[in-house]
Image (cartoon, rainbow, N blue to C red; front, top):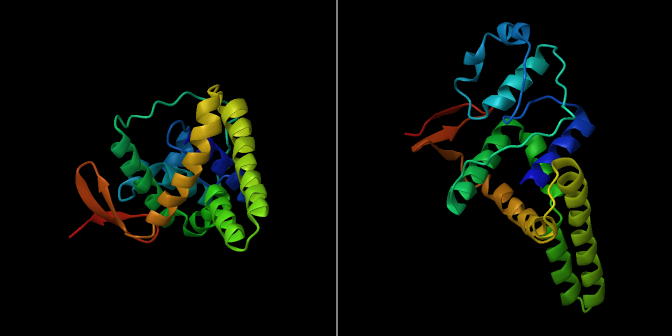
Length: 203
């Protein structure tokens, strides 16, 4: 998750500059918060961190991506709690940044690597499929090294070399699942996401 999130943020920063902030650590000038009307501006939104950063950007403030790495504790205690959180996160991103979220599909390599492997196998060119699949896997290892090893400081070869390619495949599944429904489960209640990222209690 750290590798995927870090890579995604770096791509967004490269293509359009920072127009949002991230929940784990964010700092604002008091004048910026006062200009946007205080923290109540986030009251109706699921992605409050995105809203704060995007509103500051819209008002003309500069949003900067820090070069300092931080330790962040993931609070989900079970596998299924983590899965539900990631689906909710993807759905929230879909409504907050619809164009950017749609483009996220192109950042996953393993689903396309498997697709081309199957296509080449069906065309009687298994070696070409294996070569292209290997290329897809190589790109995941390169990102795992750049974002995971160098940036995040992860030192487990198993997590970077084995779990991250698997996570890349799962990430595509979460992305696809984000288009199946506009409803999310938030603190035991069901809410419906609206265009722009607002949410309301589901009827």
